[in-house]
Image (cartoon, rainbow, N blue to C red; front, side, top):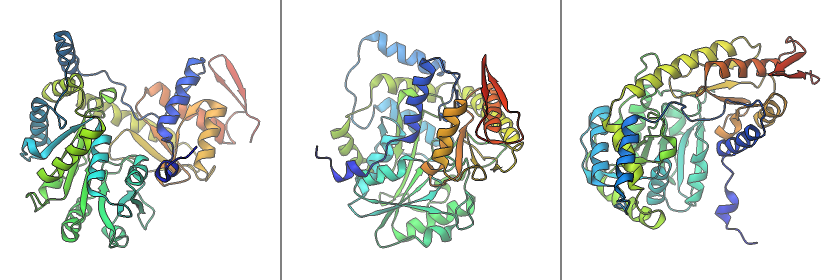
Length: 405
């Protein structure tokens, strides 16, 4: 069988694969604890549900404009005014089937083969593969000091004549780091100076903790013309816990949105009218659910951090936002893929190996679950790894005997 070079170059999505494995184990009745899933467990906002059912009951389920309905764009205009203090026009917006598609069509619109795209490390698992899908070259850039907080010097040292774009994800998946205001200011000025596209993947920008402030790129950018290379991407999946609705958007220059729309037209056409109606309901409805989710995640995160600090050898930096804790387990095993598989096999706890995010030896642990699961999950991990733990552990009625330490 002949497979394309691009097809052969791509890796399977580690997070989606873990979800599949978890579903199979749960279906078999295994006592699984899922600390890998990046999916809030709160219910869909009622305004989204009523908007969805209203259009569904009408029976008028038709094609939508490729770049989104007028009503959906008006909701994004309102969202951008409320949370970015920037008024944009409908022509500056494309609605896509998830923020991931919005990023993908943006990359397809701006990249040529062999172009390079820079993004700080650790990074979301899909960035390298999305860049490769365009025939371009991903350039992950770790901070020189080994932290989760990049410096402008780290980025500048990796600029070449092939650099076409930079992706910034702050708050960051997987680390939860909110990048410093000075770094954001420097990166925007650098992109404008070098005429490089700057993609802000802002999907977590409302899920931040302890009063940490996320820097608004529009407060710094000096180019608000149609020559602007700033692209801001957001969506409903994380703040509204609407992962299954697959609605995201990008705000950019009119010319770029026009090109992105042409690409999307030949990929998927316009997003479902049902899902856009639901998104409109969420954006225009009460926002108390977002704050409730944020508070729950902040509390869950503190519980998980306290649990992890009981380990000898585990190093963890409290995240500034998101729903992840990115912990250094290299004291126990520097091969994070082997460690994650070991934990799944031995104690039925799902984690995501840090190697998928460019940081081997780390595990990404999700706080999108209950306090009970967080506590029991970390206790199981400690039992499996810590030689000072008792030799036996009960999971439900099943007794486990540790024979590997």
